[in-house]
Length: 217
Ligand code: E4P
Image (cartoon, rainbow, N blue to C red; front, side, top):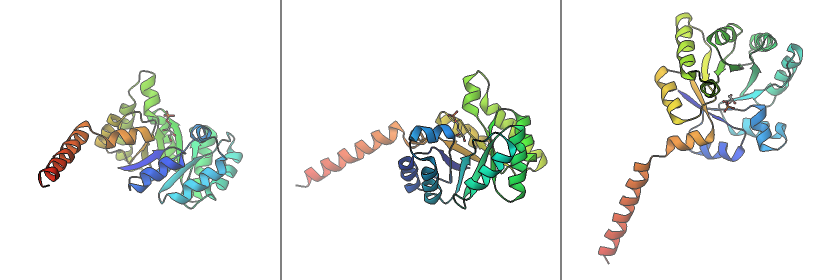
């Protein structure tokens, strides 16, 4: 399973990339807004820091403008994946960009039917938002299970990119189901690294080592 970081924060990307954990990045307009900097410069920095796919989202809603914006975003770096919303214009733009060999991530997927249609339009990735489904009392992970089952029946090339991840258990469940990619906010990746028994074990090793040093004086 590939791990993407769901952020536009350069420091966080550098921190986890230095650990060798990142296969790619997903951004969206809200994440770029959170950074409060020139979005073009932030997007350029991200694409140059990372070898893997970087999803950059269009903000146009009409087909022609989406395609033009997608082409412009694609010029930001050779690892850019153009992210379009799951709308009729988004699907049309997905088909046009994909047919020009520009990879597309169809975002804001909340049903299996939407995922199937995005795959038919040529999407490289579909992004079901599981946390937002959980938030309204649905089972987000059940949607991942259903989409994966359908894609396996028909040999779709499209990869399921599990988005809107809220906690480490989401990641374990997505991996058990065989999801292709999870995109994680930095805080979830931090939580996956930590375990209280690791901290307790390390404290005890270091304290025994200090006692050993003192006993040798
Ligand atoms: C995915 O590409 C989105 O950026 C993201 O996962 C949205 O998650 P949220 O529900 O935490 O905003």
